Structures are given as structure tokens and as C-alpha cells.
Length: 323
Ligand code: PBG
Image 1 (spheres, rainbow, N blue to C red):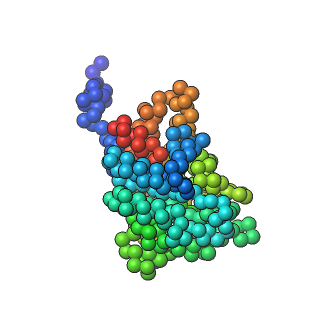
Image 2: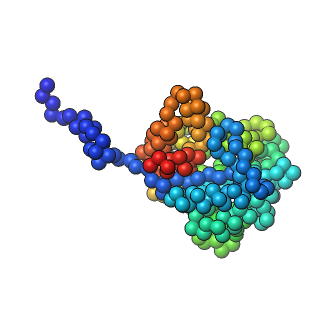
Image 3: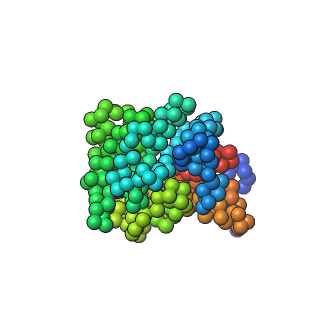
């Protein structure tokens, strides 16, 4: 054959393949979600997330030191709220001595340079397990936004570098920015979960925090996974309202959305490689059906290739160890 173009030349050996690699993962890409529990010396493996733990603050601090020493620079905090502190207002969320607020301070003291991001939504604190306040069986928007502002300001007060609203209420990014400005927190960033879909893949996370909705589902606030235009609309609005970083969540079934969002905005785009995506790889690997390490790197690379500047992932430590 006479061929003008032989594409395989660039795949001939490992050296040339590495020279022409378009997408490379680094420790700077990752945000590590951490689940924090009350108590001391407590480490609880999440049943649907093998080898992932909910830990008391003392052990969490150990973990954060480990992460920092591996070159990881950012964590995203979630806390498990005791049942007796849950109610329909979510007021434990802005308790200045709450577990979240104590955790932010203690982690900042122990590892000052680690970037602390905090989840902002009412579900772990809600007796109904919803991301907002419930009235007559509905999740009410505007009162919830007021609560989210108080929650964000209290996280900033405790020392959070970024608040990360994951609730999908309307107008919350603008309200949170205004609240932070009015309270003098001009250096606190907002990472907005802008395109967050109502997904079946959040199940293991809800096990971890005991935060499954007590009635109904989250479809009146999280997005319909059949839609793409809506993701762009949500994201552009969040950027306009003052989001510093936007997020697409979940990641794996939404790589097209990551790319479209990336092309539409001029802020960093984050992807959340969520709990169910973690569980799928773990389960298949346990059965011996896929190679776990290869699956981790391939899926994370695909998210970055799709356009993610940052990836929140339970696989961060494994990935950094593999790089
Ligand atoms: C809730 C929240 C969820 C996740 C992060 N924040 C779950 C939900 O919306 O029900 C999911 C993360 C994961 O599945 O890994 N505000």
C-alpha cells in the first residue's frame, strides 16, 4: 500500500506515545471529599464505599496531613449530623460550635496551607433529608437561600477558603456572595454546583451521611439528566451571580456536559466523580471483572479530557499514588 498518512506512527512505542499525550493528571487536579463524624478515634468504613471512611476529627486531621504530604492541596468537607440535632430549619448548619465549624478551625490550625472547601446544603441537617426547608410537602426556595447564606457565612467565619453550595436552589450564589461581602469575607471563594443532576449514583454518599430524602425525591431542585441546554443556563447564571468555580455533577455519565460547560464559561470547571461512580469501579474490581487501578486512571483522565480543570474524587489518593 502507498499511504499518505500513517496515524499509527504516533503510537509506535511508549516514548512517542508519552510525547504526544494530550491529557495528563497531576495532584493539582484533585479535591478530596472527607466525611467527618463526632467522637474520638472513630473510623467507620462506608459499606457501599469499600476502603472509604467516615472519621472523627482527630483522625481526619491525620488524614489531611497525609494528603498534604502527597501533594494534594484541596479538601471538601462533609459532616454527619446527629439525629437529635436535625430539624426542618437546618439551624445546626450555622452553629458556630458545630462539627463543621470546629473541623474547619482545627484543620486550618494543623495544615494551614490546605485549601478547605465546605459543602453548603441542608440535607445532612434536615429531619426530612432534603437540601432545603420543607413546607406543605414542598422544598421552599427563598427561605432555604436565607439559611444557606447563614451557613456560608459561618463557614467563612470558621476559616473556610471556599464554600460549595450543592443544593440547586435559585439565586443562592448571588445571595451567598452578597452575604459574604456584607460580613467582610471578601476572600472566600464560591465553588457552585451549577449543573447538578438528580442522579441514582448518589446512593452510597447518602449512606455515608445518613442523608437520604425521607419522602419523595430531589427532582424539583436537581436537574433532569435528559437535559443539556439547562446545564448551560444554570452555569452561566451562577457565573453571573459570582461563582469563582463551577461544577458539573455527576461526572462519568455527564462528560458531554462537562465539555459544553467548559466551552461556555471563562471560570475553572470542576467535575464531581461521585460515590456511585466509586462504588461501581470497586464492585467490578472486587469481582475480578476490571483492573481497578487502570479503571481509576482511565475514568479520571476522561473527565479531564472532557474539560474538567478540577476533579472531586474519592480516588484522589489512589490516583496520586499511581501517577
Ligand atoms: C447533597 C450532596 C450530595 C452529594 C454531595 N452533596 C447528595 C445528594 O444530592 O443527595 C453527593 C456526592 C456523592 O454522591 O459522592 N447536597
